[in-house]
Length: 407
Ligand SMILES: [Zn+2]
Image (cartoon, rainbow, N blue to C red; front, side, top):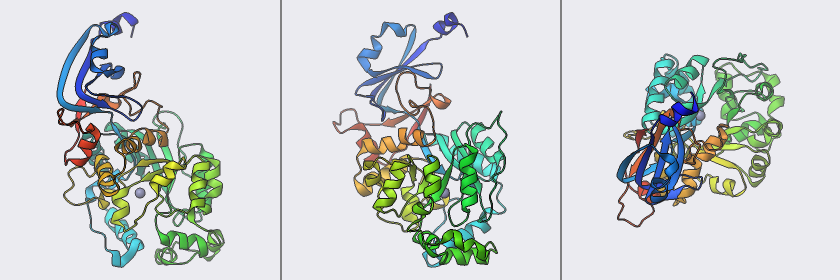
C-alpha cells in the first residue's frame, strides 16, 4: 500500500467514558484512534479529538463505556471444550481425575472442540492463548479461528528423548512444545524441547503428589504410571532426592525462559529460581481452587520479579453456569473478590504479563499508539460514568461480561 492510499483511509476515533490498559494508558473520559487495525493515538478525549494529524476521521461516542485491550489466556486446553464443566471427585484424588479425563477425552472430536473453544474465547474478549494441543491440526484450528499466541504440542513419556519435528516455514510460527509434567514426561523430553529453540511450557508444582514423585519416585503418580503400564524401574533414578519439582527442573529452567502452568506449591527457594531464570507462571485461580489448592503465592512471586499471568486451564475446572468459561475476566474477578487484589495488578496479569509469557510484541494487549489490535478488536465494559469509583473496580465488582468491539 502506498503512503497516499493509506492517508485516504479514515481514522476512527472512539470516545469513551474511560480508557484503560496496563501500560500507562488511563484517561476518563478517553479516546482511542484506530486506523487499519492499529492504534494511532490514545489518551484524554480532548487531546485526541484536537489532534489535527488524525484527519480525516470518523468519531464514534461510546457513553458509559470503558475501553480495554484484548486479554491473554496464558494456559488453556481448548481441545477439551466440548467436555464442559465437570465436578471434581476429591475422594479419587488428582490421579483419579487424570485417569477419568483420559477416558473422556479419548473419543472427543478435538478439532471441532478446539474450534468451539477458540470461538468462545474470542467472544469472551480473549485475543491470545497459550494453548495445549495434541496435534498440529488443533493448533492450526485455533489460529484459523482468529486467536494468536502459542500452541504447545503436548508430549508424554518418561523414557522419551525426542520431540516430533516441527518443519520451519509456513504455519510453524506460534508452535511450541509442552512436555506435559515431570511425572508424565522425562528429563530427556524436557531437554529436547529446550534444544528445539521453540517456545516451551509445562505443568509444574501443581500438586503435593508431584513433589512426592520427584523426591522418591513414589506415591500416587507412581501408582498411576504402573496402572497405565508406563513405569519402568530404570526411571526411578531420574526421580530421587529433589526438594521440589521446580528444583527437579532446574537444568531446564536455567537453559530457557519457560512458561509454567500452576506452580501451586512453591518454596522461597523455588520462587527465587523462577525469578532468576526469567520464568513465567500461568496461574489459573479457579482451576487451582477446583482441585483444592489454597494459598497460591502469586503476589509474592510478582514481588520477587516472576512474570505471573492468568489462565483458565481446561473448561472442566470452570463452574457450571459460568457464562464465560473461556474468559479471563472471571479469573480476574475471582481474585479481586477472594483476595482484594489490586485491579491494576490484575489487568497487568491479564494482558501484558500474558503477552510477555507468550513472547508477543511489547505493546501487545495495550492501547499504546502503534499497537496492532489482534482481530481488530477492543473490549467494552459498561460503567457508571457518574460513579467516582475506578472503572476497573466497577467492572470487577459487578457481574457483567465484556463485549467485543470490532474497529
Ligand atoms: Zn493444563
